[in-house]
Image (cartoon, rainbow, N blue to C red):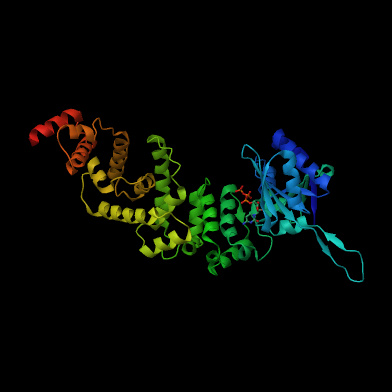
Length: 427
Ligand code: CTP
């Protein structure tokens, strides 16, 4: 049952003129080629929720590639074609992008030489999508500009906050939807519908997650990690045993979530206070370090191979494990130099992850103090100053390191003077 409804008023209210005009143009070009044009998916969902979203996914009933080339010529965009999927992307000079896909028109032969019938393929296209909330389309051709196409009671689900698959094999055909269901549920504070949840559990327990490429799973995981309610999502994933299917040879434990929560909080502090805007800090890496720490080597190898992690990942993980052991066993007073001696020159991601493995409140405070000290540490002497004193070889580095440690612990105020005294006492 098709529910058609004009939502132009809503569009005028939410969509900025610049984008609304673009949508109008996209419809006009469709009319010129005699193709029905729709904007679909997340854009429509968010519009109905009253949210701006300028991820424009277009579906053409007809020849999407022909349409895309035509549009690209008039909009002066760069067209990138993905031939095998009958899709393509238009890139504007400022990087803005429109995705265009084809819903091919299909003709069904009727018996007894009756005329061929054309069936609405936008419906089929929408039916194959992940959830009802993402399966609506708005027509853009001028005569029907702003008409919402809702074939499956999608608006109802959106209003009632329900995540529902459209057909029973949905999770089997695309198991990444297991992760997407959780992401949308938490983002919008919706509920996964009962039958959908049942089929989801079935797909998980029948090892369908294992059938997806690591790359696609990684993308979905990264998206979950970039959402606001990440901790709730992780708890739910754990309870559904999703992690045990994502990361073999390790077991989900509630305490891993607690630890990651602590680490995320620390990360915020770290980026602000230490003034670090390091694009290399990836939540995905931080999560994996924290999740796989203290697990056996097999777990690390599995994750590295499956999710295309950099070589340094395993080294870092080993290093982290050694650090954690030392934290447990050594009765330090936790001077800055104690941290320095154990941690050495670890990278920023590890510095953040370490915060989840400190064993007391006191140690946490001292660790923060250490990080501040090391990030502000500026030696007023270099190797050259030491060489000038007639010292050479390995000794130079050792002295520099010695001075660095003393300075970290606040035992040196003036390193030039300290070097002077050091040289005299050595002579
Ligand atoms: N889609 C799908 N199955 C997937 C991924 C995507 O059916 N595994 C469909 C959905 O209709 C979705 C659209 O493709 O709305 C676009 O996908 P994507 O951009 O990943 O998601 P959005 O819904 O736009 O979500 P977000 O707001 O997170 O971008």
